[in-house]
Amino acid sequence: MQRTPLVPTSRPRRWLNEWRRPLGFSSMPTAVWTGSLSLGLVVVPVRLYPAVRKKNVRFHELDRAGRRMRHVRVPESEIYLPVPEPETRFSVGPVQERGLPVEHASTPEVTYEEINKGYEVAPGQYVSMTREEVASLAPERSRVIDVQQFVDVSAVDPIYFESRYYVVPDRDSTSPFRILRQALAAADRMAIAWFTLRSRRYLSAIRAYGDVMLLTTMVHADEVAAADFFIPDADAAATDKELKMARLLIDTLSGPFEPERYPDEHRQRLLDAIGAKTPSLAESPTAPSPTRIVDLMAALEASVKAAKAARA
Image (cartoon, rainbow, N blue to C red; front, side):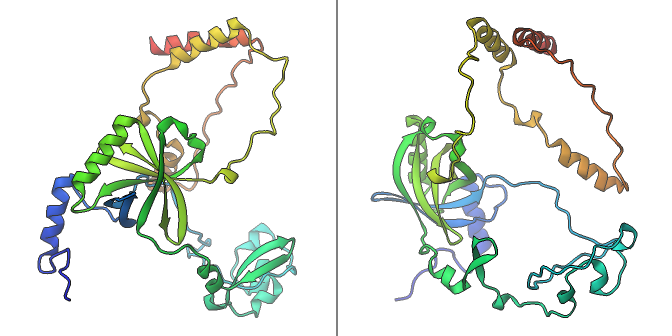
């Protein structure tokens, strides 16, 4: 039996534009996952898109002549020649003159196919596994986000949250998707689910987020480190007056969260320096050290006054 393709092969671009418009897409990003959101007998076709795009400034390694460096796969060695002095460290010459292992001058590079995975069980001792052995233990491929339960949005501490993805309805699932999203928002609940992405099975939380839903991958319970290394001082309980003043400071500094008020200043400085092609960044003036206030009440009162003055 011949199957009818979901996307008309004769007019793929027109179909894509028609799919975009009802969902409000101005430009189509690339989905990292396509499949279905499963709630018992209810199945909603969805796609996942990255909700966060890091804008870190990435540097490549160059030598002083401006040539990009390439790392070579060679076996480790404990025999090293002395590192040359700074003025000769970057000079071009035989491998032995650059402070690398002696054997690396004649040891051929190990090909990717010859490299196994090694798990260190003791210092210098490894259990070796082939890539095929590791791949055989990976979870089965699945195109289903399998919902296990629903919990209150406030029931999961943010310490469990990792990466975030937008959950968007697929072509013919806008109606059931909208119903589920609105129901989650009205109930103030989120779904706890399993799904597989790039050969790894993730625990995740799904909640309503504007016109879409937000899926957040989660760490497991045994991955959250306990804070039992800190032992509070039993004799350092705050007084009612101190708590009242601290609460006053909190209330004075409270307000709506405006993320645009907190830009990445370090990244901007890097970009400015790169754009200007300056050989070195000018030293920033050292900020004067604030006067140390030992008394807690005095510190709180001073902070409240400063906060009020800043808002005046």
